[in-house]
Amino acid sequence: MRLILLPNPQLVCKRNDEYCPTFPLGLLSLATVLSQSTKVSVHVVDPRSIDFQSPLHTAELLLSLDADVVGFSTMCNTYPYALRTAQLLKQLKPDIVIVFGGPHATVVAKETLNAFAFVDFILMGECERSISDFVTYLATQERNPADIPGLVFRQSGSAIQQTHTYPLLPADQLPDIDYGLIGDVHGFESIPLDVGRGCPFRCTFCSTTVYWEQQSRQRSVQNIIDTVRRLKSAYDVTTFDFVHDNFTASPRRVTDFCEHILDSGLAFEWSCSARADFVDHKLLDIMYEAGCRCIFMGIESGSPRIQRLCNKKLKLERVEPAVNKALELGLPLTFSFITGFPYENIDDIEQTLRMMAAINHQGKTKCDLQLHLLSPVPGSPLLSEPNVETALDGTFSDISLAQALDDVMKSWMAGVGKPIFESFYHYVNPILSRQKILVMRFAWFTLFNYFRYTALALEEARRYDDFPLISVFDLPELPEGTDGTKETEVEWCANALRMFLNASDRAWAATLLAILEFEFEAYRLRINGGSCLLECDYDVNEWVEGIDQDGEESTRLPSPVKKRYFIMKNGQKLQVASLPV
Image (cartoon, rainbow, N blue to C red):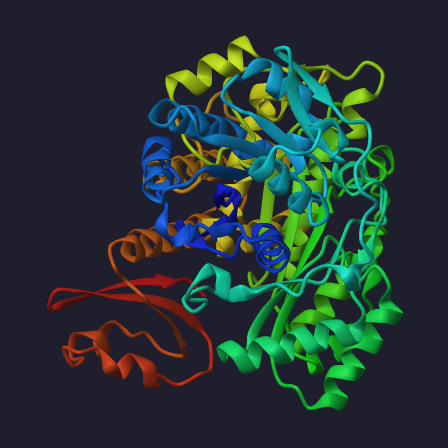
């Protein structure tokens, strides 16, 4: 029997408008178990070989791999894609066995089997213990499927869902993943390490605690260090991404980990996720010394009220010190925010925008800022709260829009609906219009990603004049296809900001407009192949006229900063955009 495991397309991460594949870590863990405990031929599809925009292409690829069984890793935001691929695969090869697993399939298991006949089984929860039982059952048919913990199957045409799964394994008993099962590990940005599972916190909008059964586990310090040493030796890699919802949940443990790294003499770089109120100057110092070079922090909201209502309870006053220390160290930070809570009001959104603008200003544009629409996730406590409603309007959270939906997927969404596709719905806000939330999110997301210096100058102006940031993009509607990446959408944002500035009689408006025009011109040059952003203390226009055609002099300019320039070589001509002092 040949088993093919298909990665969830969420594992194709967006970087500068390009898709960059990363490891399908969970599937590699299952493949490692099967390769050690069974004689089944198992193959994990390399995500670099897949066109995740085309379910038919993926189905044909799976067919070419001569699979008897295909396992789909699923999440809520890509579930329509997984279902469509499975449907097409079943049409191409009716006798193939299709099994779904992962967080989303777990919480909508019974509903999925009852709605989609082409899905044969769902294996719920953490599957490192149940996968061998399931594969042995398929190979021999000698076991009652009802005896396999976590297996959802059909009996007389109806879905039968087990009420129990295997107890979760202690973190250090999880498999030592065989990364060689993916083929060539080189060519990825970094190597992810499974350093633990689950989260100790209970945010109401998140389903993590449901999937991991309210447990948070972390591998031991020595286990992580031994894994890093093994992978460095085997694959000559030096950059790792520590995969855990909150690596710094125990600051003392992180300190111990960093001290062990320093004592071991093991040199490598790593990234992780952290809570801003769980890192202080001392912890950031030792993390950086031990090789930490990037931290992701989910802030979610700048409003203390929202923090309380969604049970995040982040101590917002600790964000600024964390940013200051990280900047001092040269440690890149990414901050994620959310809007679209059902109880959010205009003051909450204003506080979130002000916190984002303050971080951008404080970080001198060096922090990455994300602003997402809240997606209703099946299994999350928020969906069960009184008076909380969701609705479908065809505008999805950016987190849910991993692939374009074809007509079949759209018909499922309209016909099957909740709870299977509820992550494509939105929370109904009785106070704020949906359109206002969409405009605000899209405009500020685009501003912080493409016009960071303009956003910085806008915050300077707000501190001087104290106007509400929510008033900057007071527009009625969005351009079509708003994902914040296309030139037309960036131009929409620039035009909207021009309208705001041209209508202002404040002294700072003209300066802000000049900065906006610089960034917009630099953006246009960049998407046409430009790459040279530089700083110097004199006007480079005369220098540009006599520059060598190869443009190499641009790397040897003096460092004192008075102006910032973007220079692009366009054929034999250099074009310049300059930022006003």
